[in-house]
Structures are given as structure tokens and as C-alpha cells.
Image (tube, rainbow, N blue to C red; front, top):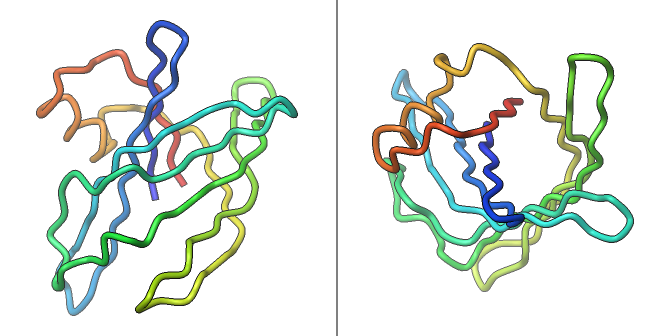
Length: 130
């Protein structure tokens, strides 16, 4: 799980990249996310839409992931840590769990940054990867 967060004119937006392997084939999905900072300082990230994927089956459009995270900075290391939940839909139960995402460098190794630079031309990105 990898995320990219951009800030423009005071507004945060982002993208997530999820990938997994089944029978030696890599599958991925890229989603646009809304991001905001709550009054208590928590970082709230919620899926908006699936931008691109190569999933073996059509994904359910009604399943949305919500992350509620704390930002921790210790020197040069930054991480987001907290809970994630998905909503319940007609076909799926809600899921929840813990997520910890850490900043990594170099950015050039990020599949999500490479995708966004190719498709959006946005070179002013901040990357955090699980």
C-alpha cells in the first residue's frame, strides 16, 4: 500500500496504490483520495474513486476505505499510524484493521509516483509508502 499526498492552495489531495500477486501475476489499483486534517490533528483519508486497475474481476464500486491516522515525526523519519475501515455493502461485510505507513526515499522507486508523473505531470509530490 502506497500513498502520495499533494498540497495545493491549502487543500490536501492524494492517491493510493494497492498491489498484490496471485499465481505470479501482479495486480494493482490506483485510487484518488480526499484528505483532511481534523481539529484533533488526525489525518483523515477517504477513497473517492478508482482511477485505474488491472484486477482479475470487476471491483465493487460501493466499497470505500477510510483511514484515520496520526502523524509522527522523529527526526528525518515520518509515519502515519492508525485505523482503517471499509464500509459494509450489499455484497461485502465491513472490515477494519491497523495501518502504519512510513516515508521512504528515493521517490524514483515509487510505482505510484511514476504513474502520476506519466499521467498527471505532477512532479511536486510527497510520498509515503507502507
